[in-house]
Image (cartoon, rainbow, N blue to C red; front, side, top):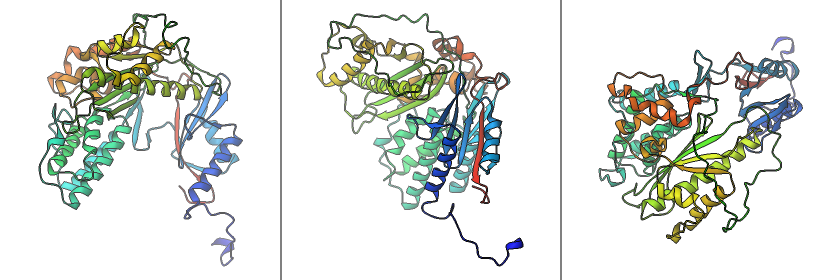
Length: 468
């Protein structure tokens, strides 16, 4: 074309269309980022970081989508375009990334809301079934439901494909912040190979719940909760089997820079969740400062005969995840303030974990028992009892009813939503922020303040191509 019409061109390097294209783009992108002074985080292989004065800049890479956190993001995009001749599309403050919407409230608080993704899910539902999902459900499944006991006819192959597609869409909605459906989707995912008609109806109900309760919003609140009124009952563990154990801190982590954070975790277990296998479910909800950053709901690997055993298994899982979270933050250069806070609603488990003189009477829980106690003895975390009515981990451990969970769920996911249902104005709905501390209602990083947290989204493509 143009002046070179009719000429034969020699391809020096193919970017698209070959099996090796993805690898070649990754190598090209990596070379550019290294040349710019970035290095890979050991915690996440797709997060690049570099030190800038008293903080770090971050670039998260997902194929050819880049999300940047920087005080001067425009300088980064100009470097990509001018020095490395890359074409950037969709640059600017992040509003949509990997299926999730982002916005800022009037006070500058960054919010995460998968509104458009749920709307597309509803459109897909209409294409499958010719109508919208029922707009009447206020919980993903009925309270105390047991889908494993369903004996309705099995679905045909077409029905199985629909079921599996719907489950896949729901799983990504969970990743985007809808942790209120985690336990229901985890349960229904068990039947993907041979689902029944009753199972499909339950998945339709989950879609109906998302359609009615679609106005969720996770606020990225960076204010640190005030735990000064939470007692730190330190004990002398020196004469126990744990001796002088200390927290293992990686010696190859980058220098911690920026503002300190602390972590708080809520854990719960639901004994005999599955009536067929007898398995309990572990539910864990993690916060960094007052921001819910990770959630977990899964059937336990052992069959426990009492609540004490299932709660200890859940506490062990939460402890492992706390260790992982603190290690990840350190490898991202984030300074951690003090101990991690773990809250559970089983007083016997809390006392057995925190009192050095406690004795283990059920030997089959020995591994979980020692794992939790050693973490406490090391000074890494504290474990406190929390009344079940205030424990948000209930959302992740059982099939709940609206009235039961709304007080814990509203301040996390629906803080600014004013539903027509009169239950939305329950006074108890404001109890959970008092547990997190006064920082819960504070503002996150302000885009005008120059703090970290300004995100830039863009699709990156080599200048020699038509796009990515």
